[in-house]
Image 1: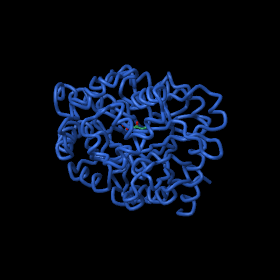
Image 2 (image 1 turned 60 degrees about the vertical axis):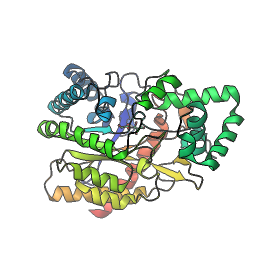
Image 3 (image 1 turned 180 degrees about the vertical axis):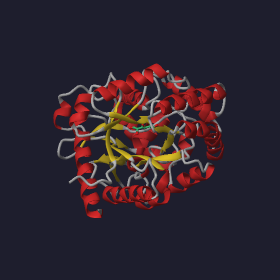
Image 4 (image 1 turned 120 degrees about the vertical axis):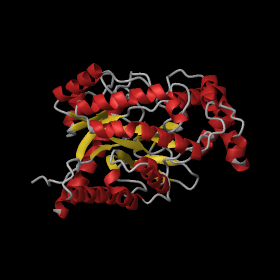
Length: 400
Ligand code: DNO
């Protein structure tokens, strides 16, 4: 018998251009997807027609569109400049339309300029799988020698500068160009083909910005959109910073347990929530994830489950979903306990959607076209989902 308390098992789908089809996702056993209208420019309202069309396409494949990942927050909103007011109005419109379509959760992040950072997109593990990895020495090399950011040397310190110089020189001219291109192209949300000069200009916009100022802009954003979200029956879920510390001199304010609690204090609205991403938060040893699930409790509106291995040199490698340093079993147990307490409180939105976040490239992934986004091959994610399904079913069965 299937235990009744299960979280929804979902997969991310990047839309019609994704080489992984909805029919394939259905065969993984997922019942829902996290998806977004990626072609709509940041700051613009999502047309109702386009939302309904995407929803119908997903439903026709026998799946549900449970979580929007993401409705991006524009740089004008994050920096509270330019078209901020118009973009907030558009954000509210989008939330109303998503709510009217019955889509209950919207993920966003509040990282300035760039989303996630990795330095190696094909790090070969001993058994032949390929993983995404962040190596601070390589990232420092990008910062110091490709970007030539003014404060970079001061931020990294002399030992790191030397290590980065060695790494940069070893790459040679061709390797340096390729590495720079790959790094610029990875930051999702930034159009492909960005030059170093474009990127510098984007960073310049935040010159002198600090965490307190950015948090104030986040408060302004939440104040602007939460009432509309509540009315529309939509819950917002902030995605933690990845990696969870400041990069390229940019402040980051959703990195630690304290940050997440501070976010909760910005607004008591039940629509003010979190996408619990174990891979992002788990990159810091001082984040105790099981305790965090308990503390955030009712504010968790979606879950990204994956693990990482942290090394003494500061590098972070994405590991198998049940490998590495993150206590995924403990997190799933705590999430199931949270669902039980919501059910006892008769909360209609008791069920949390989880998705395997990222996956290794493995087996037939090497014969398939490259994934829509690094980290999203089919087979590696299917393995992750299968493992997570086993964990949650076993735990739920024991708890019942
Ligand atoms: C990467 C993702 C992020 C995430 C956004 C949410 O795989 O976890 O790009 O979708 O940060 O806004």
